[in-house]
Length: 65
Image (cartoon, rainbow, N blue to C red; front, top):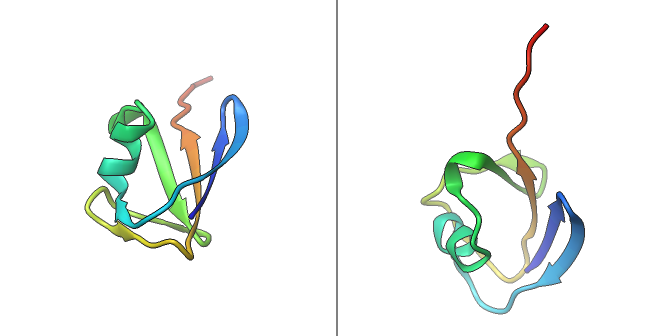
């Protein structure tokens, strides 16, 4: 699968399928701090990712006025 990380911006290729939570653990990213988007759709932590997926991982950013 292709994994696009947004902060810092980089692109990885990951072999094999795995859950969102497993992918984040492998990349040492906290689930609570990241949004995972597969093929344009936000996915939950227990979703299964396959080798054909394009996955974008974005950090959660909050702010206020």
